[in-house]
Image (cartoon, rainbow over all chains, first blue to last red; front, side, top):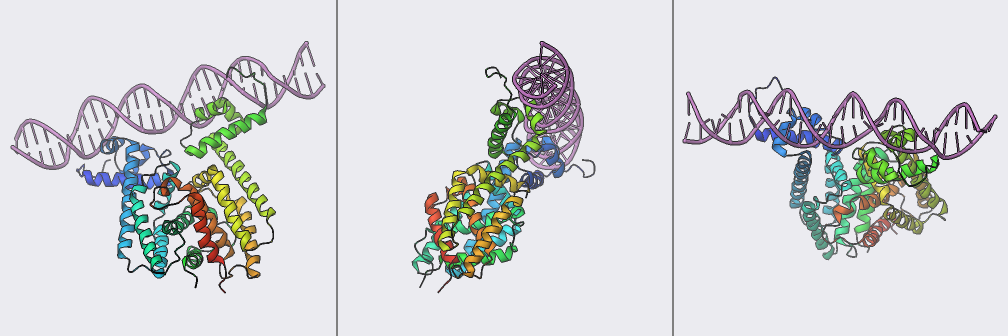
Length: 201
Length: 201
DNA sequence: GGAGTAATTGACCGGCCGGCCAGTTAGCGC
DNA sequence: GCGCTAACTGGCCGGCCGGTCAATTACTCC
């Protein structure tokens, strides 16, 4: 580093390291990232990374914690904005979740890396989300607005997983014949999903 | 190697290397696997791996090609066994696919590693499967047995993606409150999915 | 203004990696 | 039986990794 005066701002330094680390870990996964490359991207030296985070592994844990905390906070905010639970709200929630993932592809990739390493630490946060969402579905079922022969957690799981996999596998399914755009797929998924969870007359 | 006589069987050697490689690559991903560990698991030396496959990267490509070819062949066989397309056949196909993935967790993981590295080579094989499946859905729609306002490829995509993500994210969602077993989830998914694709009277 | 601390740096280290090389030998064809 | 080739081995190498260490210095507190 030769241009910026060596002023001290440890909080800013930690944030820059975490930002650079997140970008590289999301793109390449833990093992493929080199600390020398990460240091360069963050504008610091490797020693400083060790000073602030201890080790590469601890930095990786910090990146995941920060990202999942952010995800949790954003989802909780959406949940708390929700009005009276009914079928229309469920539909809007699915749309919002789909658009959130579309706008945050890093989240999707981070989940995939985390699943592959068998790390279920993210459940500690998002199980509260799923629990709250399931309670919401249960209330809507009690009011007769959603069919009540389906496990409410499974209702949440179906749309969360379909949306997540859509964005994880984009490089794969975009070559399948006849596949439509993000919005076209969302529309079709909602047709199936909303019809499937609505009680029959 | 000290016990087995050094008999020569290059086909067997290649198969042993590929088997060991697949197991380790599926578990750890390309970057984290060391050739020394792989050689030990295969019962050969590193030099022999280079002799047969050229490089670590080429071995990884060979592993993926072999695995996706196997997946393709198995799915094609199931497609060709299929009787007259109707809603019951769609249901049985979803069940069969779910059980295939349950019994082959390595396939799910290999797809996830492949997606993360942005490799869409697997599309070259399975786009034929999706095309055939979509044509099958289209015929069923024409007969009035499935609702015809949904893109047939999206019908295939919805169940393929939900099933895949269910097994990829198992370590994650098994901690969500209220979640059921594999079969319980499959039952609920089928309730939603089959109701969603069936035409209303 | 000086002492002390923590932020920050650059050099260095031991370990380990992927790949290569020289050598051995199983086995096949003549 | 011999020549030849490809299967197979063990040692070695240069490069690069994660992490450490000694040193510098920004900055705070007294």
